[in-house]
Picture 1 (spheres, rainbow, N blue to C red):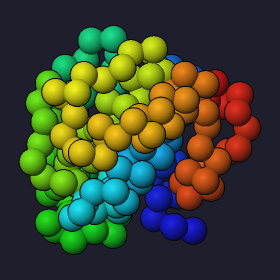
Picture 2: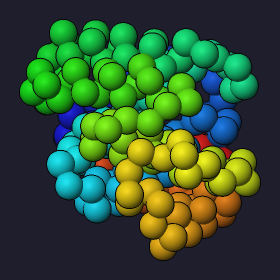
Picture 3: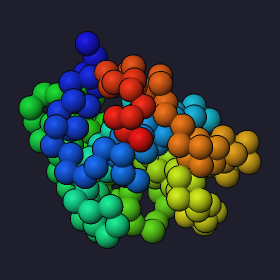
Picture 4: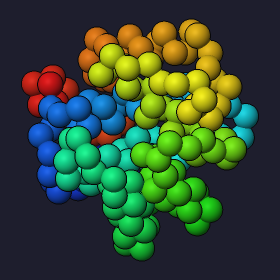
Length: 179
């Protein structure tokens, strides 16, 4: 069992919102897909951090609509999980992950390749709400690529469930669990 299996189960046990909500696991998995695509196309981006971001970034939301502190709560949880030895990442990666989580819901961009991929991956999944991200709020050149944007749009609009991600995170493949 990978570290991601145990983490996903632990996060889901404490997740306060409906699993089939706009910010639930189906969204996390689409963010994962977007993040891995972006990281592969962005020099210097850390795909491992981007994947952990997808799992952590909305895991401690308390409201589907207005929850301005959820990023900071996710960052705090990164610190807790790291202190417990549950994140197989180096200290610098943990710091990057925490920073990505803390800032992802603020209207800013990042010059850091990894943080930019994380934030862009989340913003590209605005398609689940039929919203296109604003170009000036995207951090990476890869996120501006029309092909990558079209793929992310399709995943979000069609509510695609990432089966590779389900397996990687050790989650049930029963679609009804998340949608």
